[in-house]
Length: 135
Length: 190
Image (cartoon, rainbow over all chains, first blue to last red; front, side, top):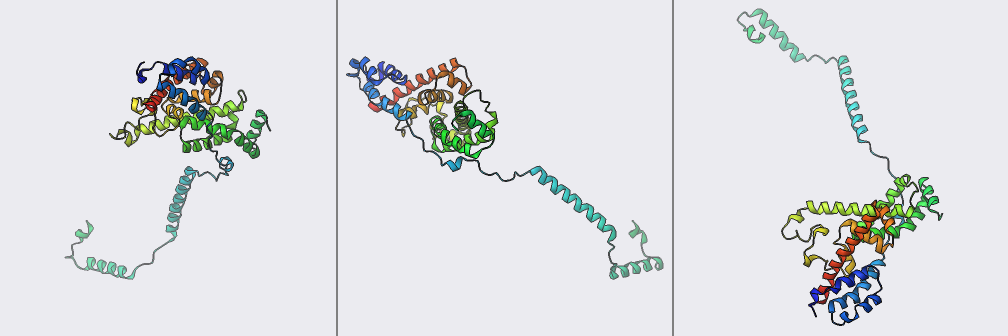
């Protein structure tokens, strides 16, 4: 008898069982060989059961509720959000410019005094370096 | 509402009661096919939800040329196969794939043909473990044929292939499974 790892019957037996042949028919055909080959015996003992278990395997089902259509919230339109922000910003700038035309700031007395002193100095003191300021 | 055409028409009208009937009728089939292709329960739950969402949103795509069952099989199989492709790509680009210790165990399943790694050791069912190593389409063809009992022309419609292509897929699936199962049962005997 050949070593079990080299047995050429194993593939034939597996192929027959995978093709749907009944285990008893396969057993009858390879009876003599099976008496001496432990690998083929394991195949004929276990493969039909494994195949049946795989074919009849029950898959746990999800609750019906989780598969029903859910109410969908309003879709978010990112482009319109950006457009709305740009338009708001532009409107704020235009409004600011328009308001600035009507807004005349109050004169600051300290600054007025300094300006008057400077004008007096320039007109009365010839040594004052006017060019320096005019540059 | 037992007739497929009536049910599809009611779904087109967005009839929620009809959708409940549809889910109750088709969920076991959808979950079973997806689970047998992906082999993962969490993925099965996500993809099952995805299938029914697609049905609700795209029922207009069902033109009634094929049976409603075929259309649902098509959706479930495509979702599962796309998920496998995505998963394979994700594994390839993950850091662990390139790590020296984990590289071999995270190889895409179809490429992993080192004899010692052919079968996942934690799998109690040899078929599940061996199927895990098959390329997606072979796996889908085998599942639709041997688990769902569909004919080759029906599988061809579902996978969008010719009948001869399906025959070839089934032949290669059986060949690969035989090789993998042989290794598995040999390791259990010795």
